[in-house]
Picture 1: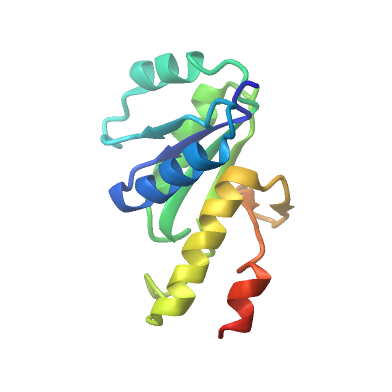
Picture 2 (picture 1 turned 90 degrees about the vertical axis):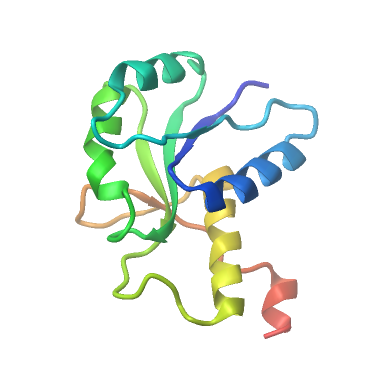
Length: 150
């Protein structure tokens, strides 16, 4: 089976959970491609386009970040990704909602949010409709087993 999504990130920390989960859950299928963009400015447009061309069957481009939506690279890179997608594939966001603080401050909640953003990036087809230009992928906060322990 071919990849359905091309996952993009600029984070070392977020890359490992995405890569591990994608490879583990592929069950013989090709895992979703994970591309880490190290240079945001000047944006390496030609190189990025060459990477996207390697995954012609990826129907979606998903930007993954751990920071809240208003604090990471999303708002600085979104227009570049949309230009290169040429309107042929939606560019989606998988990450935390906008927030004033960079993290919750509570380790257990942070862990649950991390699991939810990885699940959204890899599995979600549900989008949150807003008045903004950003379409954020959503997933349940935690599996039932984790909710019982809190």
